[in-house]
Length: 195
Ligand SMILES: [Mg+2]
Image 1: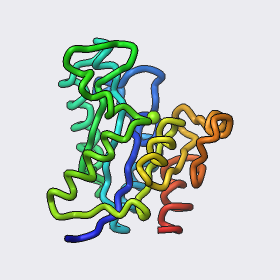
Image 2: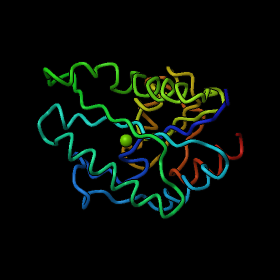
Image 3: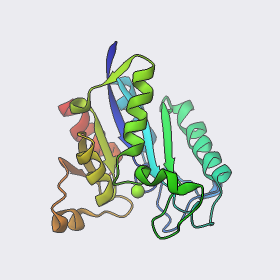
């Protein structure tokens, strides 16, 4: 058994720009400045990269599974040439307000629930890799990302890109370890400095 550390990342508003609605085409996916560089730096410091994204547009009938998976593939096509490819990517198609005969089974996937994180950790374990949660981080732009990280026993970092829910986190007493202007600063100013 080998122990690994993981950088769990939210997608929309953390790696790519949040357009204010669901992102389900290649054209809608635009990387945030230096996000690719940040991921490459984390990888070369030994972090595995896992993307954990709520994609309720599927339950709502706005996007299809095929479209979301195509966008996720495209994201990796952008990242791989920059040495920033992700190791795993999980999305949650479920939405509590849109009951769905198929996607309701993913209820425990929807952040702030930790289903996607636990699935990733289980799948690493099946490969003989033990995730050291106390050395692993969760970076996102929303309160639910920080909450998911906390619930999973990871080290949560909030970024001010995307929805920038810094004030909401304080209001709800869901406190990240660190708040950074963007993913690049989260990695360079905090994660690599404290890993
Ligand atoms: Mg987000």
